[in-house]
Image (cartoon, rainbow, N blue to C red):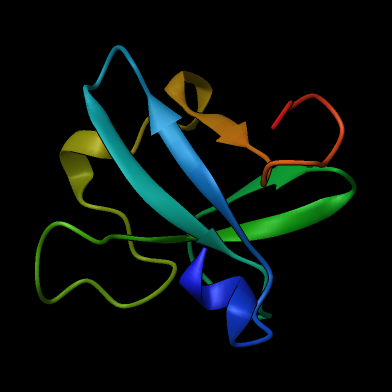
Length: 79
């Protein structure tokens, strides 16, 4: 991912039931985050303007429906 190239840890956030994807940013802060690999990943909306990192649009604010997809080459992912 581009963010990783810039030195910012990131993961893909995916929800099949919600038919939506976002990015998880490995930076400190407040707001919505998902846990994976012993870390918190801040939700970053990438398909609509006006949502700061950590703020999730209400229609997607269902953390139990999200999956963290680690970068290729990390545990649980091949590539």
